[in-house]
Image 1: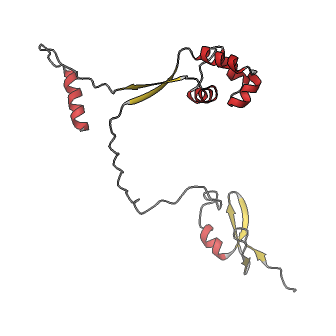
Image 2 (image 1 turned 90 degrees about the vertical axis):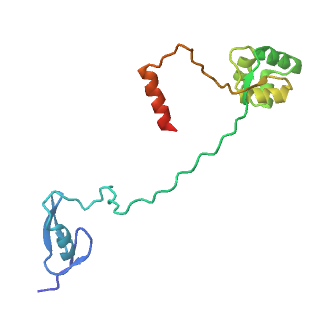
Image 3 (image 1 turned 180 degrees about the vertical axis):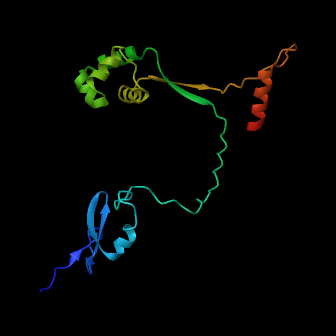
Length: 179
């Protein structure tokens, strides 16, 4: 008898010493080494897979709880709103006429498309704040109005003959819990 070629485990690839073991993995019969036989041989056929399932092993330790960051105190400051002026189309159209340039030339210089420039100049659509800033900067016209609004605090006063309902009491209790 000549020297036999060594067989290799069909799961881990290690050379098999001796005859090896035949087991069923996912419906296929495979030749495995002693170590893989110990690992997979005792399981019921078709109940396991050597391929990873993507599931993570359960953690036995509890995750470290981090203290929640405290919200920063917000300072009451007036609300600043920016709005486009009502006669934006007229202002842009007149500025274009004064420049004496075509829409194509202006679109390259201002940084807006020809269609956007035409639509804004003819009043088909209102420019965004960003577009209005570009037009203001190029033509040196005013298109954005800034308005400051003070935050309005509502004080509710109850009439003298007011009697609370059950719903009012429930709302009051909920508010007390939140504090």
